[in-house]
Image (cartoon, rainbow, N blue to C red):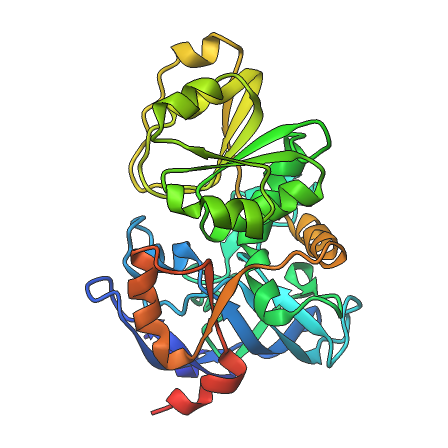
Length: 363
């Protein structure tokens, strides 16, 4: 007979969980974490970002949620214990864990520091770990992970505004680097000015590219240009603006997670241009082939990065003072925040102040 979540492991833990898909509601939840293994790092969770995929997961929008779910994969805190073989970090240091906590460690992807593309990737929450138990994420007081998945946070990186970089940041940084878009002389479009898009603008600019924000909302123009530092702003519903910009982009990072037309975006690309999809709409997008053939254009996808690249991204962000724009919330505001996130009513990432507010919600 399966053990109750609070009896599976020796270390008591407390967080907030969704019990089923019907309510999309989170509530206080007692569970347990494994003992610290030889290669494990345990840390006290101080902050955790709320990613759009947390909302999709608690509602089972993608069809593979495992309940109960303790969401959260933008997790940062302070190391409280390390295993005997851990070399990367020491007790008292600031660390984070992103979207994954395990993989096979023997395939070609793992051997190339691309654990994120391992067929046996183990996600930080809502997955089955090596020991057969469900993984629980960062909406909780304590976290333990193999040091392979631990990211060190530089001293000058604020933990609250740095937390979202562990998902949102790496999701835009990785394709900018891999597809050769984040460099001087390149013209990059960022579609959607939300949790992913706003850090995409910051990274692309810091990497030297010319950056244009492409949005359906003219009201975001001032924010994009004057606050986030974009070079230009393009309203995708304005046919005259879109026509004038045809064939002028080397690449476009599309962060939109709702169903939307991508053919107009393909039209904006130069010949050999690349449209990179990093948002995850729940229904397929329409993709005629002709616009690709006429210009040898590429439509590609990209998902987070391996731990090595995630560390590189955090170090780059610290050097260039890149953080997310956040709204810090208390744990008991969680369900209201989820309702607001569903309406895109956040600028631009909710972050939960776990360290100061979680304990007060214990029943």
